[in-house]
Image 1 (cartoon, helix red, strand yellow):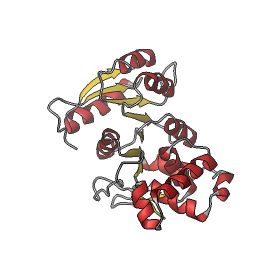
Image 2 (tube, one colour):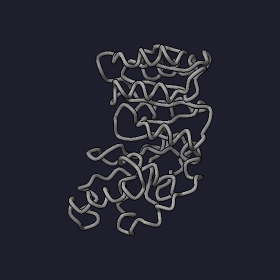
Image 3 (cartoon, rainbow, N blue to C red):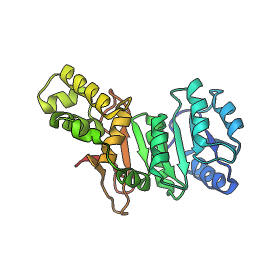
Length: 249
């Protein structure tokens, strides 16, 4: 993905391991033309991130002395809309879910390839959805599906599947031969029954429940791009080099 604005994308990179920062910085600068500021301390990172001078935050889940999610909480108070990518060595589903619950735009493992990092940045900056590294997506699907699944009606399950692949309310209404008002009512019911706050969390729940799945590309790896909110079009299909999208099962 090439930077198209007149000035470079400003990235705050937060990780307490200098070698990791060096590798990520190299890809961000050489592949994406970003202007990168490195920070290894959580408190300093939170202060810098809240200043509003960065276009994207990349934060390690586990930092020395503090949890990376602590930084996210502080940032969200001041800058609720700034794109945030979490990075981690681990694909623990509880950590992934905790990050999603805080409204991050992606969860990437440190084993990611440069092209995966590029795609995660692209998804985060576009605002079109939530990027999940293949291993993180797989770990989410291994979690036990809550009993709420049985309380969804067949019509609600179909709506949830369409939400999870990026359909707008209007598109869902056309596909299911019902009004947008009916679609909105079903989505409200879905959120209530699942105990989630928004479409992003509902889409992540659908992935975990196996209602949608990541396809596999030529490299055998899956990638999930989950829609963020009503108003965004369906997450685009990437070619074999760039990745994959969530598809209805």
